[in-house]
Image 1: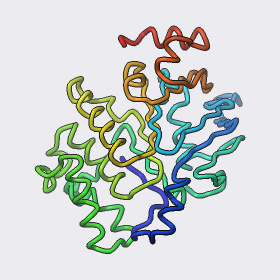
Image 2 (image 1 turned 135 degrees about the horizontal axis):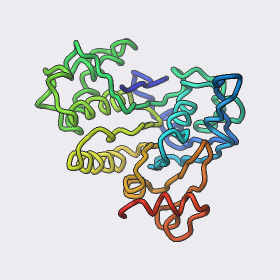
Image 3 (image 1 turned 45 degrees about the vertical axis):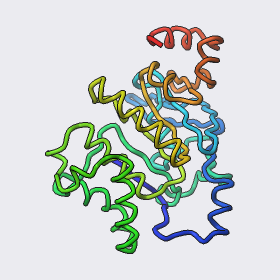
Amino acid sequence: MALVFGESCFPLDIGFAFVTILCMARVVLENVIKIFPGKDGRIIRAVDRASLTLEDRELMTLVGPSGGGKTTLLRLIAGLEELTEGMVTIAGQVVNQVPARERDVAMVFQHHALYPHLTARENLAFGLKLRRCPRDEIARRVAEAVNRLGLGDCLDRRPGELSGGQRQRVALGRALVRQPRVLLLDEPFAHLDVPLRRQLRRELLRLHRELDLTILLVTHDPGEALALGQRVAVMNGGVIEQIGQPAELRARPATPFVTAFLDSSPL
């Protein structure tokens, strides 16, 4: 499933577009805490004083074991969860109290949840129609996504008639057509077989280069994180243990957990 919050449906004038590019999508988390109530009055500290800077147009991967707080961190950036403490800024604006729909962030979930009664074409256009974008603008954006993602042969088929890779491409395309400032990906390749996973990784890297997207990708696979991320953040038990370039993490792991976790990667 892909959600996008706060996107514009209309072309920007040149002056505004220039300003937007200059501070387009830098995301900063400062001492972020998220606490959930647990059983018997206990609390669950899903994210524990996490600080992270995602630079404009950077592709960062966030890696760690299941249940380590990665998805919760994405949801805090997207505005789908409220902070307990700390601060999140996007393009220099504090967004703690900004509704999700106004953050101009897209999130593609592990389970893409395409609308089963709609064709791939209709799924791609659905969010734009809800926001009453002009018909010609919808057609233009959908056509661009179709060309970039190779979806031309499945536009008139419904999700149940598509392969896993095609469904994931449609979910990604549904996010891209809305032209968000930040793209959040939560385990997008987790349920695909190895050859298809490798193919979609290459396509993601190509899209990042071509579109200058700011991307934060969550994975539990250290090999995937090291292969895709310009920088990698390692998270465990709600704590960000280390952030750095892949070679730096390999050469100078900051904690025993980082050492052990990255040693589980074949890379």
